[in-house]
Length: 281
Image 1 (tube, rainbow, N blue to C red):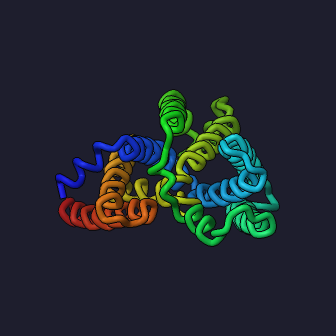
Image 2 (cartoon, rainbow, N blue to C red):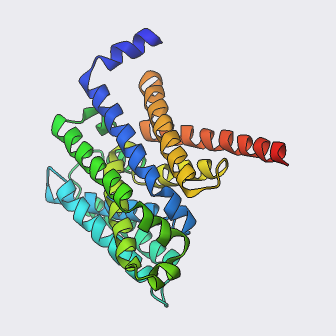
């Protein structure tokens, strides 16, 4: 098995996939804690469906670099989602449901009406659950992913204190003079960028798992925001790396394998948390 792994690592496309997978996992976990604590966990799910609809539009229009369509549409939807989520008539969960279901149905509808592929079912399935395109990344795509990942990480570090304040007490943040609305929009934009990056890795339907599971796993063991965030990032990277290696060696779907490893890690952390709680009691 080790010899087989070494052989695969000799191929550039495998190394590219591992680099991109680890970076996406790291970025996804950074804001996962904030989304879980703000009870906005399913924003990733909603935006991933929007990205699916945007990808369908790009496919129909024959645009080679579909990120030119997907990225702005997903970012705009994230901003609108947050804005409508704060509306008294349409709360966050209802807004997410509306955008999520609508975008998913619209995307599948136009892919059927303006089909450009002889294997529509296969294309839809690979888009929803992850495809092998992560193993066919070109060098410039890896560079774009690295640049965007560095930007996401830098934004999180630079605005860490403001994100922390908005996460735990938004009213106090406003009272202290902080523009909490701008911080919320920043979070929404960053999440949208992460969603677009993660689509090729785990697919539209599984993206939210990368955001939620590492945060929930970390919360089983730690109580402080900083410790939870750091452990969430670490366990997310480990799970993504392990999932990628298992998928390459066993020939299993990459997205599903990574999410399965995340689920297993959550149960391990849950058991460890129970043991830790009983020992301290």
